[in-house]
Length: 195
Image (cartoon, rainbow, N blue to C red; front, side, top):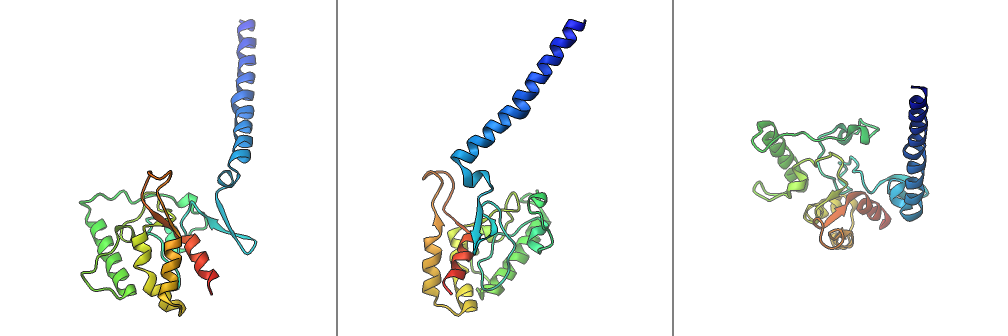
C-alpha cells in the first residue's frame, strides 16, 4: 500500500512539473520567440502608448471616425473597461422580433447619420452585432459608405479618405480564408495621421 502511494505521489509530482510548469513555460518561450506581437496581444502603439489591440474592437460613434460593428455587449456604451470580460453575442435568431427591431433601429440611425435615402442598402455588418461583440473589422463596403460623413466632419477631401480606406483593406487570410476586411482602429489612427 505504501509503495503504491509513493509511486502515485511521484507520478503526481512529475506530471505536475511537466504539464503545469515545463509545458506552459516552453510554449510561452516558443510563442515569444516566434510570434512576439501575437503572443503579447497584437497591441497597437501610437505616440509611444498602447491605444488598443488589432484583435478587439473599440466603441466609437464620433462623426469624425469610422464606426465599428454594433455590439451586443456593453463596451459599445463606453461603460465597460474590460472588453474581454464583456464578450458575448445576443443569441437572437432570424425569427426574433427583438432582433428585427434592433436592425430597424440601427438602419434608421445609420441612414440618418449618413444622410442616406430610406431605401438605401446598408452593409449587414453595420446592422448586425458580431458573434463575439468585439469584432475589430468591418467590410470594405461598410467603410466606403462612411467616407462622406468622415470627410465632412473632418473638413478633408473625400478622395483622400477614400484612398486611405483602400490602403487599409486587408485581403483574406492566406489569400483564401475569410473575406476582405478593414481594421477600424488602424484606419482611424491613419486618419488622425493625415491631419
